[in-house]
Length: 170
Length: 372
Image 1 (cartoon, one colour):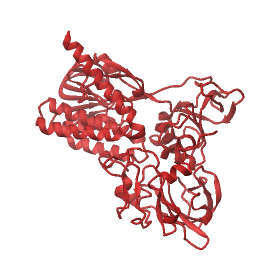
Image 2 (tube, chains in turn blue, yellow):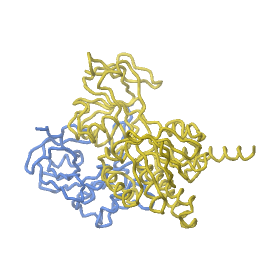
Image 3 (tube, rainbow over the protein chains, first blue to last red):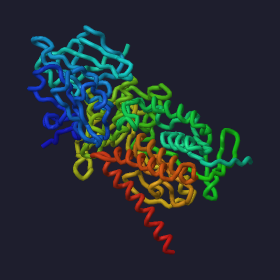
Image 4 (cartoon, each protein chain N blue to C red):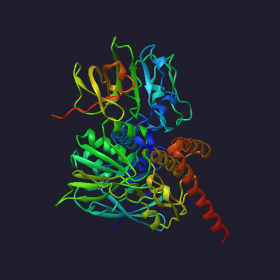
């Protein structure tokens, strides 16, 4: 049988995500926008901890610990998305509209999309899953050239869509 | 030939050499740093990604920004950086032979720190001498330093962090990466680096290898095949992938020649890239007064290289009596702890054990010498 998981496929499996302490469960996500931390390996890294203004992310003195998300403290502000050097943090708002969820993800390619654009939304494997509408682009100086893009997609893709197909260069 | 004297001579102005120079000069030492390149910073200025680690390791800051910080700190420290300066030998354990541009001179130093870095491994296969086959580090220099795209359709060989990061950066520069090919049964580098490549739609083919590069005058494509559990090609699994560039990210090895010339005892540690100089916990080699830091003493990554540079710089300052020994020990312990932090977890533990072996080799050698 083909082995699955981040070291074989390049992206974490459903089981790896569900077992990681930074990945909120469906119940938590129903309560409002939350950070979704898809960091499943013990690598030495902790900028997310300091990036959270609400103390919702904990790593501790041992910087190879996995980040733990306190879903009660997390308000889904998305300030942790750009500082993650691994580009592994997203936010998910299950209730952006009656039919759509909103997903924020880090994006470091040019050209950037424009607000209002309809684009191809892709899953963790880069496969096009559906169309999505760009509803926000944040490019603060503290983000250090990582743009944070917010996209609205049909609700059933909230746990599936994690980026957009790169846009062609002019 | 002119002869100069200095307290501390450092070979290499990369992550390790610059940090060593900053620490030693800030402690009051007269420091000269030599680098054969026309720009300082080593590999830092081609690292356009955000670094890992914690705040003290400058985490979250892009490599080239860290490079700028270090150049700024080195200038303030008063260390004297000589560029276009090749150190071709170390004589009598304390004198460097230097060719700087058209001049050549010698530098007698009380302490020497070798921070000469590492170099990329090559992988021979049919057609691997065709133009278009290059080291991943070379491709990274082309896009990020010289702003030249080596090609538009790339196959990356090797899924360690270098292969993953350079693939990502080639895409950021406008290339397409057709596939990452990894002979091992699993991906070598960080999952988060692999994940961002996957989101861009790049297949990472584990248990696959490049059999051949083909093309009339340059690379036009590659034959890629699957490997079985014994690393043999699975018959019939060969496929052609059109591409104009094949990047090799198949590891690095320490540029330890100067340490060897100087008579430093070496030990062979495959995990660290091959032959590395033995050293004690202060990074001093078996030749008194010669220290090593960074990839030359075992291939790791820039964050550890900076910490090793810091430790080597403080160690020579202590040995020169420039810092109160108790205070110096405390600073050195702090740098050692920061290194242990980087050498922990699933990806770091092997290196932590390997580095301990290197210090053990030093201790065993000294015990044997002492017994003679």
